[in-house]
Image 1 (cartoon, rainbow, N blue to C red):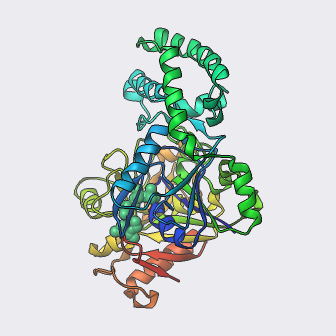
Image 2: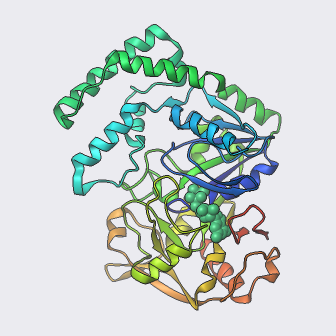
Image 3: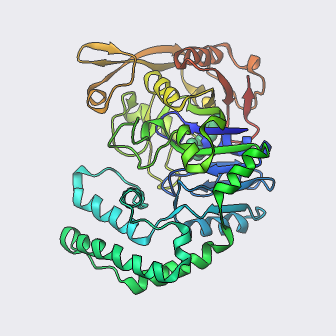
Amino acid sequence: MVKAVVGACWGDEGKGKITDMLAADADIVVRFQGGANAGHTIVNDYGKFALHLLPSGSFNQNVTNVIGNGVALDIEQLVNEIEEVVSKGVPRPNIVVSERAQVLMPYHRLFDSYEEERLSDRQFGSTKSGIAPFFSDKFSKIGFQVWELFEEDRLREKIKNVLEVKNLMLEHIYHKPLLDADELYATCKRYAEMIKPYVIDSVKFMHDAVKEGKTILLEGQLGSLKDPDFGIYPMTTSSSTLAGYGAIGAGVPPYEIKEIITVVKAYSSAVGAGAFVSEIFGDEADELRRRGGDGGEFGATTGRPRRMGWFDCVASRYGCRVQGTTAVAFTVLDVLGYLDEIPVCVGYEVDGEVIRDFPTTGKLEKAKPVFKVLPGWKSDIRGITKYEDLPENCRNYIEFIEKELEVPIKIVSNGPARQDIIMR
Ligand code: GDP
């Protein structure tokens, strides 16, 4: 049984918590795309953790955590993260890495910074983790799969060829110091030693797991609106954030993905630049940011303050649709308990016309939010475990949004901890 846990919007929906919770009954958790550029926050019995590359099943000894072939593998980051959780008392997680995953090189980070510097005020707001240069190289076929680190002669030759073009760019476009082939070779050898204990043939591993009927969770990073095809291009990430891509990035047959649990947050937040129709500003935004998430809405990887907004039905419905959602996990609902009234964006006004279908970026940038105001419930809902025990206005809020999403909300999250959960 393969399930995917993915985000509906811009990311930070609380996927980490939902995956950590579902991992209790899983055999395998797979990261299938992205890299260390975003983070999941997980609060459990061991403490609070910001994971970047480690799959969210890392706190469960019964789970094998897979870094799938679709991931941008930052070897140093992965090994540091493993050591960090172990140093905080977590039993050493079971981690395996696909031999087909590609390796994020130190120069990918450099090129990411240099390009943002070149773009100056037109920059993308990259986290500078090297993700865009990494995926450019992957599709330009000058990336390095993990297995290549172990083939010495071939590796030397390839480094020489790749650096030829990299150094031309460094010299003529960015005017930065050139890269040295021997130094990069030594780095690759170091990476090889670091990653060796984890490397497996993940294609066979996943095939066998599916055949044996194992419970497999595919864990997505970011959300639908950051998908390079369906998101707010070009203000997107560089690998697909969709459950469908899980088939590729993890290596499972597409028809085996039976459940697609899309995580939807009870209000909106976004990091980085790009259109954000239901965005709010000033004191209203500051208050929501301060009360949001678990200790405020600040990026788990970057610490940047997140942009805040009211719930966006147009974006979230679309986000669920492109994921192929079978069930929604509705999160961070407890945060809204302070509001007398809660605006919800139900349409976009574009050139004098109100639309309900999420448009392409040009129209999106012109869109003005159409809000409907729902009554608040003015109470703390943390600790409630049964749906019927939620205040009436809170249930009305959930049910209004469920109708808008056109998919059932089956999980409600009313706090950051594992047990803060209501199943419907
Ligand atoms: P992810 O990348 O989708 O996993 O999202 P993040 O972990 O970056 O952001 C979600 C934040 O909200 C984290 O700080 C979580 O601990 C927190 N969180 C998750 N679910 C809830 C919830 O139901 N209520 C509250 N208050 N915080 C939550």
